[in-house]
Image (cartoon, rainbow, N blue to C red; front, side, top):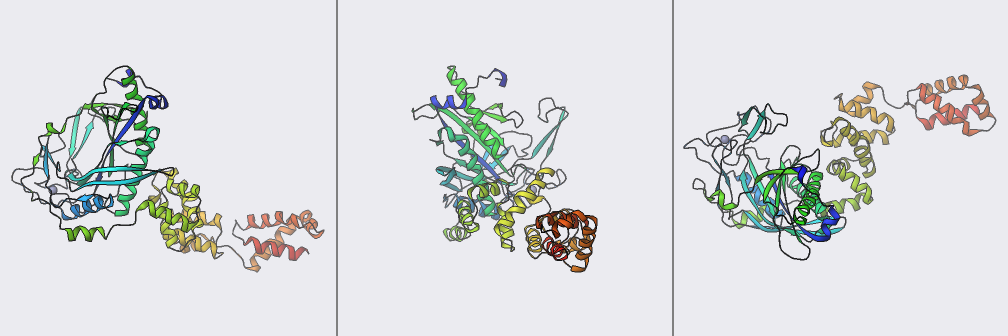
Length: 500
Ligand SMILES: [Zn+2]
């Protein structure tokens, strides 16, 4: 069915007749040094097919071995999601053919996941939804196909395809929720908040870069509708690889409208995978979804079972970071931010950077001012993430120290940031090299004040006559003369001294 023939029902209207059920499957690409079952580097961006070996290429006779660091990360993720950790579990072969999967099966986990039965409390505008986690299991990523010659980059219309196996075998953790019911009209926001909070948790654990735009964190969004109050689960669609928080929300919203259209017309929702389109906000049909039995799962015979000792699990539990949601509330109180200031800080992706800047000595308000107002704008203008804007938290704290010490003012500080982005050295070096320091030396200031008085005799006369407010014009002239680098307070004193 193509998108154009679909009848969409208004979202609010749909929810008058149907209850939505969400399900989220999130793949997290771990940042281990090596792949899941071989010693190949797992780094991003290498020349195609240079980070491969007989094991991850699935050559005959090659034997896999489990990456202990990946198991450790899986257990820590499971614990952070309040899961039970299996005492004994195995890998399984998930059999299917796909050109970017050289073994013709994916080594995954089936009925014996490493972590299961957990939950995460998700906050949406002050209301808490408990999202139950069914499982978190270990598996490997596939390679990457590039379709060449078509207009869209998809396989349709391409004249040939290239395959890069560097990504084949990179460790993944797949986190699967139980059906999330009862969110009603808030289902799109709950889905978004769950993925956002999960990303925060993954970052706090330090087990992945968790960049959605680079595919380190990929969300599949399941949605179904059932007649309101029926308590059953309808047939679901699965929208694959949605790659931003906003898109997660939009995909849910669109699927609610689409499912309602199908059901209102007396039709049946097809169980299938769908693609989300960023530009239009719609989903289109992918392929009909196979049921698990079609994959002919069976235990992987080449790998030993994973049996983490309880001592190890408890050791790993002790390494868990503070829950990000609790931490945010604690720091908001500590920093004295309003809800709006906090939302802006988090929304700008500046939370961690602000925290580090404060740790480096800046006040909470100064840290927020530079990151959320000045540097976020630059990141936006250049289309990079805030962390990649070219300025570190320590440098922001150093610039603010120069402002507070009177060496520069806020306006000059912006020029120091220009220098930092251009790689001109430390803030102090940039102030010296660009000659940005504020002049408070009376000799230099006095000469500029005299010049301003001479150039503006009318203004000078007004001040002599007692109209002190007129001093602003002379101070402005001095500031202009000194390219904004004069100590304005001292200039005012000198003006009034000379004209009293
Ligand atoms: Zn390899």
